[in-house]
Amino acid sequence: MLYETVKLALTSVRRNMLRSILTLLGIVIGVAAVIAMITIGSGTTEKVKADISKLGSNLLVVRAGRPPQPGSPPERAIRALEHKEVDALTQNLDGARAISAASQKTLRVVYGTESLTVSVTGTDTGYFDARDWKVASGRAFTESEVRGGTGVCLLGETVRQQFFGAGDPEDMTIRVGRMSCKVIGVLESKGFSGFGQDQDNVVLMPLSAFQRRVMGNRDIENIYVSADDATPTSVVQERIENILRDTRRIAPDREDDFSVRDMTQVAEAMASATNVMTGMLGAVAAVSLLVGGIGIMNIMLVSVTERTREIGIRLAIGAQERHILVQFLVEATVLSLLGGLIGIALGLGLAGLASLTLAIPFSPSLAIVLLAVGFSALIGMVFGFFPALRGARLDPIEALRHE
Image 1 (spheres, rainbow, N blue to C red):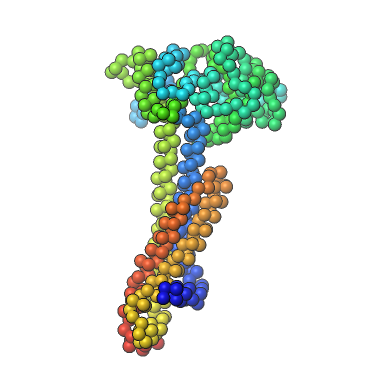
Image 2: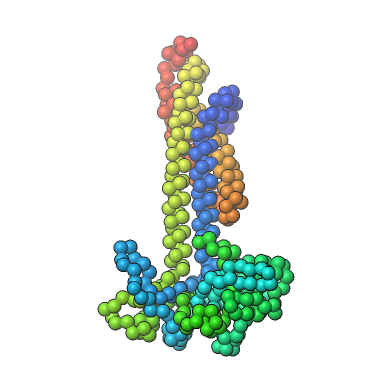
């Protein structure tokens, strides 16, 4: 019975092919838009999380000064971080996998006739663990080189390609600002961060050499703390704040003169914002599904009017109202499902194209695809019910008289 009804519905669709295609467009566009928007949004969220994770796993960043608050006046003087704060954290902080001090400055780096503006970072041996940054070739600097302020450095992949192409820069000498620096290794490529910054356009050198020969002071710009997997970053953040308040002798009634940023929370906030935008775009796209449903209702009403005499004949030879109702409901559902399937294929195709163009992961969701199929069928049933009910309740005598 159901097989014959579906077969009859497909015959009706083929009989009025152009009209059926035009009716499907609303469902096709709606489903394609929803699938594409949600898939692109999911890929964007994954990319944001991946970019943030490149900064380091379970990473917390300590900086001098409070983060700017809306409406608050800027701080007149910022008390810089010093080595005593790093030593206090190293000795007293529980739950940390790695702790590293670092300072940065943008400088002109020169090799031969080539030059490049680079972010130069002075740091210590803990930096590589704290930032989850491996050395692709060569070696990292040692504790003795950090303590002695030796003029050695590691290059990011962008700097290596600019100066040496695919060659090995190890043991070569470059000029960083006004100091000479011997290259001892190349860092693993990290690509661009979620903030659009080229993380490979960097030169790393021992912190003491950077402070003495580049900055001319002993200030520390950032302290990177990587929490171990067994300790939540929120707990480590609270411990950091307590240790730094004691070390910097901040009175209980005074605010912190430093900030601790949890990069895990930053990633979650950015992912949450992306999810909200994806949901809003998906909701807007879903409106076209309602438009498509109205189109199906319209075409089914036309179909009932055109086939009034056919309905009268079927009723006269013994068909019941429920048979007529099921016939037109199945026809509307089949029409809507066809549009949904085409829309899914189109939406996934558009999302795949966008993932290639925007360099984001292609992450289709099976749940969303199944939901789109179910919603398409539901649209057909809901908007096809009234025309089907109207056809089922036709009076056989009046229907047979219809011209």
